[in-house]
Image 1 (tube, rainbow, N blue to C red):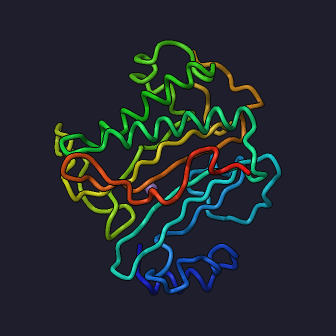
Image 2: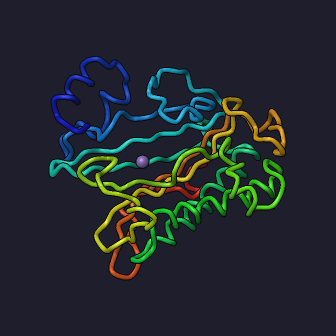
Length: 247
Ligand SMILES: [Mn+2]
């Protein structure tokens, strides 16, 4: 996925201004983008691998950017931030953003030797489900919803993956029934999100989604290294607090 030839080929077939002006191509220690950037406004952010990146951005929508560099030593970054295009969250956007951020921070806090990627994912899911219950986007009890996966119309992907010489780096997440324990030096992404759209059917027993929530796609992704006693957030310089994203 990360051969320079492929990036030249990709660059030449794309007219996306974000790609050609990417800081990744300025030669400051980076060979180029680590993967095809996702630049998705509004409802397009609910398409997980949206890379057309050519839709007009609309006042009042959020913008999700998932992009990273591949460095000269071949290590890759993978970062996602979501922010309001007009500089101000709507009430619904802010409620969901703060929920994703709480889930992301809880999941990051869980990263430590002996923890597992599964445990990090479960931490994020628990916070998301409890928050969605409070917002009325889910109903029932959290344990039952998690057990049945009755949240997956709103959060349908895993919370992270190994990161290194490939963006989705090699390595098992489980060996048989045994979840692989995190060890110092391992790097993983932590990237929960919420995607509110009409694309996936609402599971039986869960509330229909009111129009005011639709078209909101949010993901917050950091790259986290497991350290001796906890973790280090490698992407901490990319701000994610709501106050830092508004103007
Ligand atoms: Mn990722």
